[in-house]
Image (cartoon, rainbow over all chains, first blue to last red; front, side, top):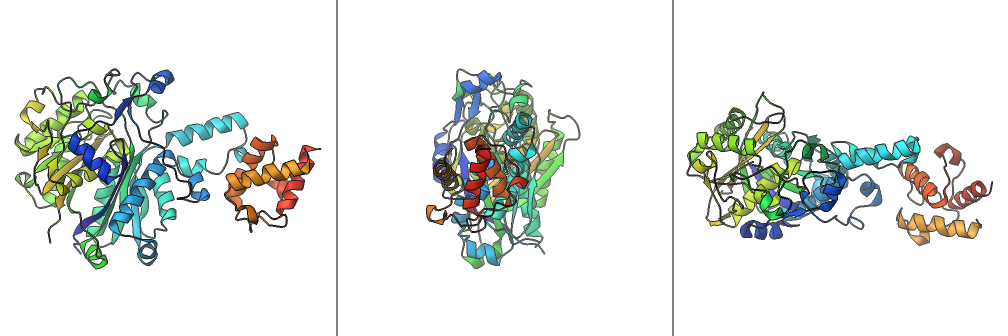
Length: 407
Length: 80
């Protein structure tokens, strides 16, 4: 069994737009979604920089029982999934008659954990803290909630792989579908934005300190980058077999051609060059493509000094210096568990609309990024294939190759 | 607290927090008829504490089967 795997639905709830159309425009315009949040400083953060999205209003959309168990990032995931389901023309009747699965990337649910323990400490009685915290505080909160809301009957699990979580979720969905084990999978990733989620990360000195200039703070590959900006939201893709998509009469947006993965096997927080390189090359091998067949790289680059330098070296080693490269994190900040899925969506939107989004704030290269063709301005270009990288703590690496769909 | 005040406060949170239609709040209505399940009951314990300052346990309410019995249960606890 070797099924072709296509994407028929996209949904996004991000700092640069609350739906696909808004996000497409922001990507084209090179618009930053980063703000300064005094509350973070007051809470003890060094950096007050963050992405921000409005709290979705779910009353009237989801019944109370499900809302009670939805964590913040679950609400973002729901909003994204609603859009993706509509785009893919998947309705309740289809879900009832077919085994559609869910593989969602998520690697924390800090607010629910903190608030439930605070409530328990205050009341010293587990029966007086309500029914929702347990369903909100598990890592699988999103897949467990969405699978019930949509009555999904296929694979149902969460992928936790740090900042590569949702890229791996798409990759795993690709493998299951390719092998004929699933016809369709809802996949994606979501990231909480509350104060509790990233405090200890801020303490490592990993976040940008350009508190006085938020939209310039995330500057992947730039010589003067000083750290990442935490961000979040939700991103969902509907992935299915070509046969299933054609049978349903769905609009096919793109095809997944390859998934590569690797583990650095070295440092807990500092990525190396070899691990990402092996992930990229595995994706190329899996898709039977050469480096020259890739038209654009959506880099993982988060705006950290070491991470960006090592990715730049890995990209140069495989692709040389001509291929256009940008990191959309320059606009969105680092969407962490959501990043792999959101960046797959950003890349597909670029392919659909014939442009490559800029790596904003790339003003001066360092010795490694100087060797790459990093796009500073929006580039009008019709192109066919993208490689999207996502790397995470512990040295987990994921690379996806996605192609504009052709029969 | 007078029973009519208790009825009003209970009905208010059942409508607002638990999204039960006002016309379904009949004195003889059972929990099941109002769509309240065992998980919702855990939340009712929290709301009763917030609204009335009463700390109750699920087992205290074993005999409370209808809405009217619930009003009476709270009335009794508040006035005992």
